[in-house]
Amino acid sequence: MDYYFLWMLLILVMSFALTLYLRHYALHRKLLDVPNSRSSHSVPTPRGGGVAFVLTYLVFLTLAWFFSKVDSSTLMSSAGAGALVAIIGFIDDHRHIAARWRLIGHFTAAVLVIAPLGPFPTITMAGFALDMGVIGLVLSAVYLVWMLNLYNFMDGIDGIAAVEAVTTCLGMVVLYSITQHFELILAPLLLATCVAGFLILNFPPAKIFMGDAGSGFLGVVLAGLSLQAAFKQPGLIWPWLILMGVFIVDATFTLLRRLLRGDKVYEAHRSHAYQFASRQVGKHLPVTLCVGLINLFWLLPIAFCVVRLDFPGLAGVVLAYVPLVLLAIKYHAGALEGATQGP
Image (cartoon, rainbow, N blue to C red; front, top):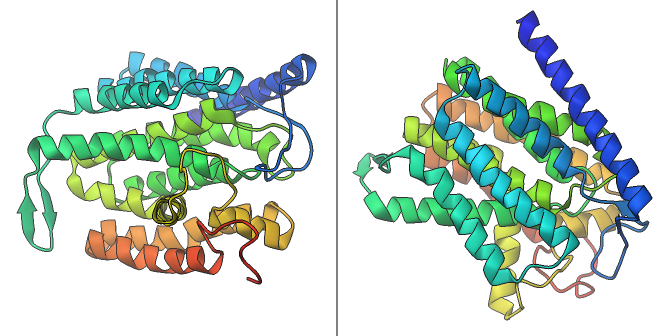
């Protein structure tokens, strides 16, 4: 235990040090995110800090694979799919990539996640066994691409994307420990540690932003870890979906409302519930903290009931999501900016 603690401390320090270096580099090269009408921040801020936890995670995950601490599918998901998405995001941060090429790259990354997992597992839902076969693999690819894009959408205020990743991963580490799935612990623990090193400088008020390289990477890696767990034991998909509920509900609710209104959903906007909430309170910190608290004190206990007390997984997702949908409605997720009044 002391051995692992020292390794994680070293990894956290290295991620923080690399984030600090990237901040100085961005300031020197004037790689700044300058506020505009679509921004949720008010001062120019260095960007691209997510590269720090991407590189740190990939290096140490590769070492873990070399010493047989993680399997090849985990490595391919992160070192293959995650790296590809990070590279696409990094280029897009510095030079725009057309949406169609980004989408092709994202689906390619999804294939890299799915390919080593094998056939889609049989899912039991409401007492019925569903063998979805190829349809399940296609839905898995769509899920991966949606998760990496929604993570980009939700990375709009200081610290929120990093806090979501850290609390989700640590929550799964706790649940894996309780259910004795020890072989699944290292990857989410490593990811949480790497992102925590970045979060030190990204916590409100942020001194550096994550950028698309970091947010897309987190989206595809978290989704990949959830699928890897589900392919080993189908019931393990439910706690992942529950713990990522804040991001899934806000992004999906906002997208559907904008689609129904006929908006160009690929255009930048500030109509997510968390963005309305941060403008209402005038700060990013309370909203970011609330996301962490919801994950730890609402979503994690429900996920625990699913994996340990045999609470039905689908019912757990519904129970977890209903208050989140109500929050999305309360904070006008997907509404036209300026068309809302009051809370």
